[in-house]
Length: 121
Image 1 (tube, rainbow, N blue to C red):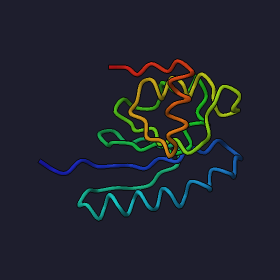
Image 2 (image 1 turned 45 degrees about the vertical axis):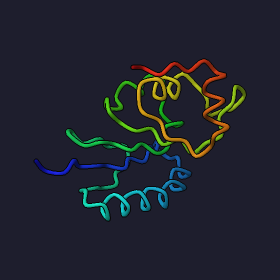
Image 3 (image 1 turned 180 degrees about the vertical axis):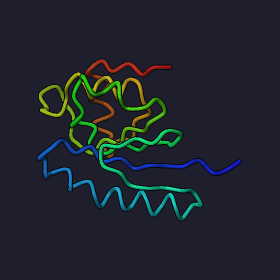
């Protein structure tokens, strides 16, 4: 059985140059996954059938686009989240409720709970 393929996907809306801020994190993940013997690539806005996707920039996914993120994806949140955050919206909520979520901040994990995020089983 071949090793699972991974894809680090950077969400980058048209004309939104700030998505480049995720490039170094994507590169780090890419090389770490490859160093552990798995196939891995980095993509912008593109999902590959059969791959496990690690999504950077999920805060930029609209509510309408959130269902297009494949099941089994990992949401890697790198933004501060609270009720007043401009990054907290229905699209991100749908993703963190549906997908495994990695977060850089324990405070964000607490914020998700305070915001009523319910993880799918």
